Length: 165
Image (cartoon, rainbow, N blue to C red; front, side, top):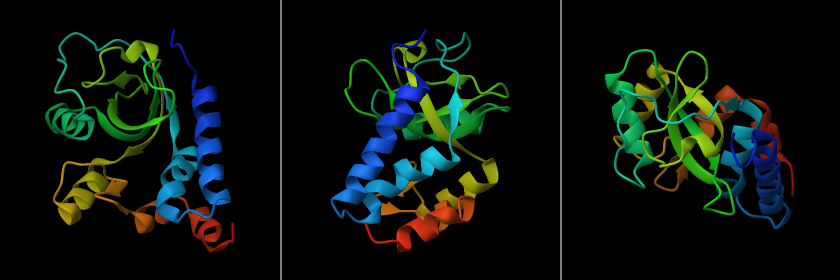
């Protein structure tokens, strides 16, 4: 059982998004956690299953991209993870199977984590990586938040972006 829950993680994400908005930060600071709250799913943590191997630490986006490209039936997910080693939600990527079970090739203790993220279809993944030509975070491509993609998936974000803090 995880040390933290997706309920706790969602509460932390809400606090983070609201806090950045309250201080007047630009959308880049609060848009990703808000998008994950609205469009994300709770994923089921588990140990890394047999047949998968741990990859390079701190390279979650590239590790997950390589895994999803090789393994049929897995979906790339980007969002946030909560772990006992870090006191705040961490922007992270992992894969899920058809049952929303986490396949995390990066973290050493995925069964003890909480995961909330947005599944990204293979088609969307290919489109986003073609535009960015990168294996880094899809939602925050080198400091350039993908506002159009997020607003297309969650139209209420456009309205939120137009509201004063």
